[in-house]
Image (cartoon, rainbow, N blue to C red; front, side):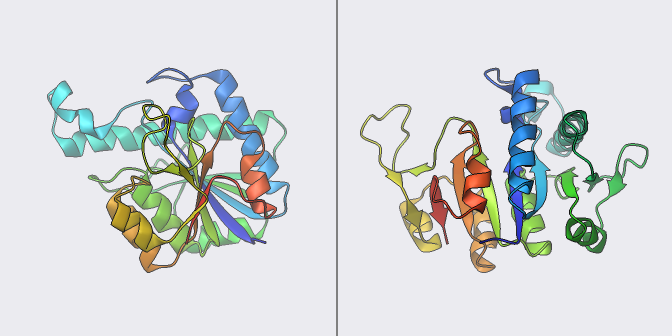
Length: 235
């Protein structure tokens, strides 16, 4: 069904049940999900968030400006990406390439679009960190940006404990209804919080399909790659 997919993982997925920090079991689960996705035969790029390390919107709490806070957050994504690469390698996965938007030459290669495409075409898993190297954005925007740049067929938006897009918060509203399918226009008209608005508009403008699903569901990403409908599809 698909040839190339970008998988977006949040930093919170690595933290597990805690707001911040790292959980070894969760890291193993995420690595296995990435391995299962590649086993379906698609080319896989993964972009990792850093919210479990530091969130840029906490700048005021720490008495620093937003640009510095976002710089710390970008470095947090690098930490998570190195962790993911390490766990993938420990599980016997070969051909994992880590590329960063912020140059850290001793740890990873710089993100160069054509080089990333060559890695993907050779079957490597490409892990992307550092966002897009710019402040004032969450990981949502660079996730869509990289998916468009790398000519991905879809972006898999992994959520923690949410199995799709709802018309209300299912944690507080027992009558909340999950959508199986939405158009870009319906998401905007209903004001649904799928991702940052700027990121969503970019996805809409480039007609990038978004699969929103629960990363806790075993082999969910692989099932989507194999054509199974899971979560909410936005296109």
